[in-house]
Amino acid sequence: MILIADGGSTKADWIAINSNKEEAFRVRTLGLNPAIVPEKELHNRIINMFQLINIKEDVEEIHFYGAGCGTPKPVEILKTILETIFVNAKVYIAEDMLAAVYAATGKEPALVCILGTGSNSCYYDGENMEMLTASLGYILMDEASGNYFGKKLIIDYFYKQMPDEIAIKFKEEFDLDVDTIKKNLYREPNPNMYLASFAKFMFDFKEKEYIKEIIKKGFQEFFKYRILPYNKTIDTPIYFIGSIAHYFRDILETIAEDNHLKITDVIQRPIDNLLEYHKNNIS
Image 1 (tube, helix red, strand yellow):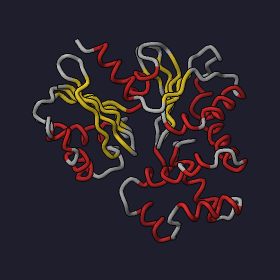
Image 2 (image 1 turned 60 degrees about the vertical axis):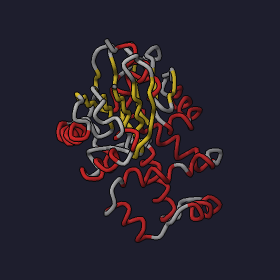
Image 3 (image 1 turned 135 degrees about the horizontal axis):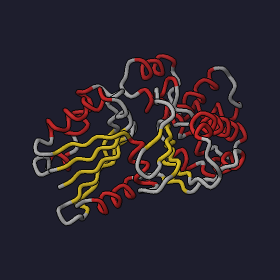
């Protein structure tokens, strides 16, 4: 049995493949970002999913692609946890950017971008990923991500920069008690996921000019820092992964055109494409 996981900060999609390269089952757990989620919570989120625990001794390989897995320390934390649970498995961990590459372009050169709870980008030359800068996460970076937009909405609401009509709906939708917000941001796990939960508000109001402007500015900032520095031409394929890119594809394509580039495709959830990649590359 082989497990393939696409682990974001908000959720992690798992697929099990049997010896005949057939899908056995798929499940979804809460996010497993080892750079943010405490070790005990990471462990609990896995063992609380009975489908995974039921096969823990049958798993021979785990291919885990995850947010927060771009540096050695969090990778070692997650690897140790997985090896403790799946005692007979060889565990391979890579950052979510590589999953995005495999899901989007396989082995063909392209610019590949993530716009989900967090954000990132790379240029893949067919063999190696080139990343011009490290990702420092939701506090300092993550332009145009779910947590970026969630933060913007909260700030605008409290600074009274949000149009009254939208502010009323925003207050109805969320618990905006100051102590509750601060507790979730500074004392609870997954503050990035908490911020991103506010971004879903934009989906219902995406025709409002205020929301459109927020999204345009966020996407332009992403292009400025995460795409344009690669100095690629309109002939370079560009793929986007994630719900933010999916739901606001029309605006994303407009911003790309404004920057003399063209979006090749947008993939909301990469797990199915990732499954096909592994099926085709299992010996």
